[in-house]
Length: 84
Image 1: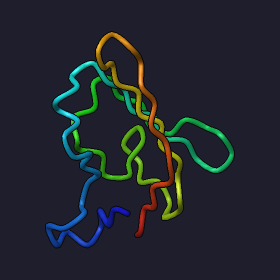
Image 2: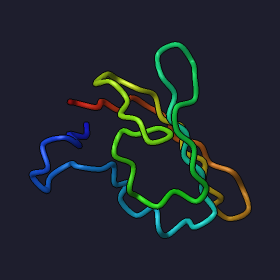
Image 3: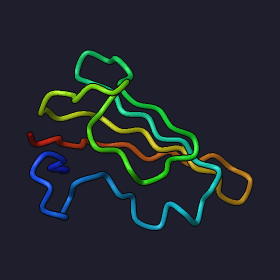
Image 4: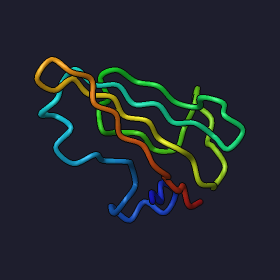
């Protein structure tokens, strides 16, 4: 989960540990209706629950991460909660 609005220095943005080891990556975040609300390639470990300058509502979203590893594409996915 991320808590971008409380500005306490903890979980203010979504940091994916060790993603910098895989510079050929892409990150997508999808809402519960299947709409893509965030995309970045390569991801810079700085998403704060925003899309096009607007705050997304507090909710659970779904992430899809693609990395290239040893010439193959590897996918990771799961839930991500934004708490406002």
